[in-house]
Length: 118
Image (cartoon, rainbow, N blue to C red; front, side):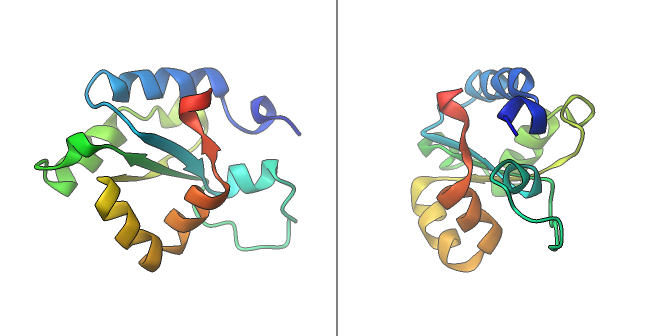
């Protein structure tokens, strides 16, 4: 199974561009059930969120967390992607703390697709 069969790569590139028009990203990682499907995960599992999106930018500093998530989430085209995304927006320091407490974020960072490389 290729990335194109599981996720809309073209829309992901457009999404990253929309985000980069607002904030300079250091990392943009996509995890979730669709990425796990791509990596060959079995069908007998708890799927969880279809997409888990982790965006990391120093420019999030000073922007309230809910505002960042709302803006980044509103730029995601769920109809084009086939599902909504669980969006996480962190500064690098915030990400380090969240890696210890949020398994879905840790999985996206450890095994997700690097959207800046698309």
